[in-house]
Length: 308
Ligand code: NAP
Image 1 (spheres, helix red, strand yellow):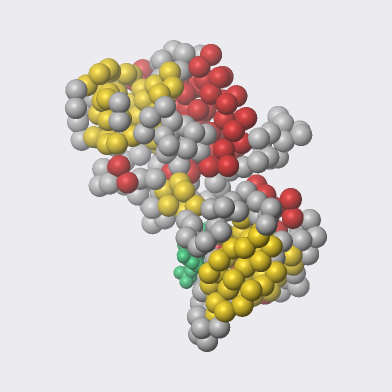
Image 2: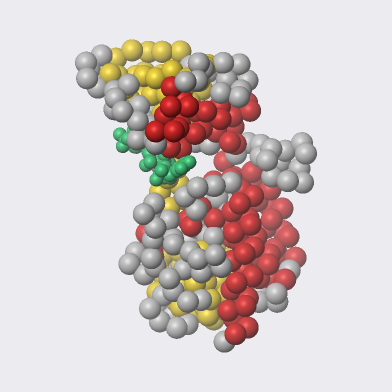
């Protein structure tokens, strides 16, 4: 593909990490080009109300916050391209990035393409997302005061989130496909000792059912094959995340979690290539931490570019 333009810095991914990186790179007069990707404003855009981003005491809609970050970065010279990254070549310098609309070269990259929560892939899941189906307890937990809810998954995240949800919900039933948790012993013991937490072992969700919001789950016991419809006020799904690293395959070092391995300066295994947000973060996965990583990555990239 023909190279259309060269940039000092490109930012791949338009979630909170990417737009914060664009703001900082813009303020360093680097005229960054940010490629948004498919989901404008990332996973945050799917959150109805973000109540834990500082500076918004009444909360702020995920898309609204994204739009504000977009405008703020443009004010300092960032250029936004509404396109998806098709390929990245980190073996050559300058680096090459191809989009659907054309190819670019760049002296430095910040990769902030996020991660997608793994889906169950059952009927009703997509339809009720945001209406009783949630992938983020920290984001949506407070909407579940005195509710009877379910959590799907048996890993550290599912158990940690279930424990968090006990602050709000009347009861939380963890639905796990095996009869042993994947989560570590300490979390397991906390969950087992919490009177609000119950378990449904060897069980999977076959369908999510409701009207305006979720009201029932069709579940199946994998040992007996028996199916049953149970009532619920909402279901949290925490079965892992898939960092969006496909276009980078074999080009940067990944961690055991599949996220991009970064050092404390947010630099990847390739000099001049930085990563921020959930693509490089298996632990925190918050809008505020992603934004912080974006700022750090842009500061490091600025120092790198000035050293060339
Ligand atoms: P994870 O460890 O991969 O666990 C995913 C859980 O979801 C597993 O229990 C798995 O069942 C279940 N699962 C996967 N696909 C499923 C499906 N299609 N249907 C039903 N269940 C399904 O993911 P995670 O809990 O998000 O953790 C990610 C990494 O971060 C882990 O290495 C974890 O240790 C780490 N982490 C650590 C902490 C901490 O230390 N405090 C907190 C959060 C996360 P199986 O068990 O049967 O495979």
